Length: 530
Image 1 (cartoon, rainbow, N blue to C red):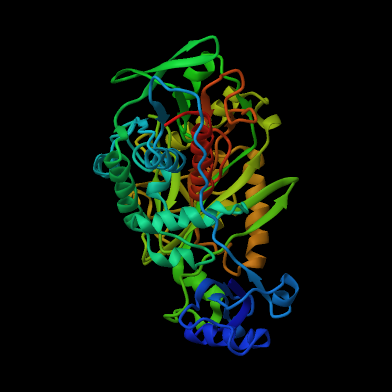
Image 2: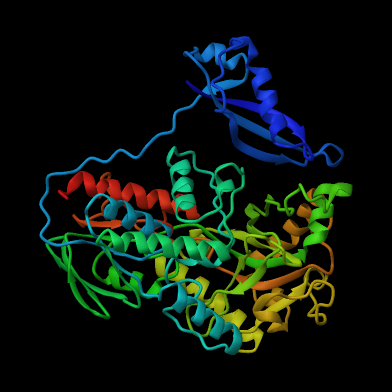
């Protein structure tokens, strides 16, 4: 019987072996000889730094015991039974005369295509962006020259927007497939510690290898990935798709998975014209905030800051201001603010960290919730709202993709101020323009950020430091629309189109998007023969 022994708290500088020893001692009441030798290992590890003078790691240890024990007896020693769930595949009976096509190769599209390929369905993936090497070249060219490729950039291409991020895998959803996703990522090259960390991350540098290895596996199993191939139309007869039109020709299909991501505005316009129902939804906009990483470490860890056994400090803050949610999102310790535009004439920011998280600055999205009534409760008004904000940032930056920046002190005083000198901007290696972000952001967003920054400073000392830096704008936190699905996962009114992932409004990060892709693949396999 495999069990998890929970709540094992140790000082942060103690070795992990002490947690295993503590777990073994803790379950002695179950029987002095019940533990199978060599089976104990760290299952989860989380940091508790709420008390700076008593920072600790809290462990869960997995081990195998002889016999079986009732839930009540296990609970008495703060343990639970554990059995890893596998993915159960059921094959359907409907015949296919054409392949399944997956549009988009972000986390949802990747995991959907991978599972289909591993079970003999040989999908065809169409991805408007390039492969990893193409994306690296396009992003480097944009950062160096300001020449944007609207189809191959930080938003579009192999791995989706998540490829150029911190590779954060933490999710708030409680789904048994979370561990499956982490295990598969490790199989393709992610560091093994993501299986243990409470806040796992891969890092952009390692995530690129993972994406490439997953791509190679899909193609080795007979699947096809058509990069630089954009979905431009659908051949629909009586609510059933017969084929897709792409920039590289027509492709017949038995079913279409729409794993488009949150930034494919032109493709969403195309499928809307084809009659697909779309609904507006809440989303968030704001800025990126940068601090010195050493200042964040000191605020979180006190005198222990810099200790080699402590991770780089990270935070997640939230509050309400004037009836709106204000929160930090996608915090990147030791990272950089990246240029994430996907349309000409707009500035978009995001955050990125490498695996080592060894940069000078820490950055995070600092966002305010936007409700449908703020933009007219219409999908295209939502898109116009976001696009308009990106265009204002483009103009404020100088119309050459430099980003508008402002110190926190100047922002709170509503003055343009001067060039930042303490926290140096990491966006595009410092290609920035000092501006007043109060004049770029909608007034309700600016007002909520003023309140939120002050409240966050009470939770994390130094958050409102006058030298901290704001870079505008952060607009791609989530999709502003949702494609409603029937119970079987198909788009309303379409028999064989499957909206999937973050862009369709059903996920909020790498892990949840991957799980939605897995669920989509399972639904397709339940329906169709191999």
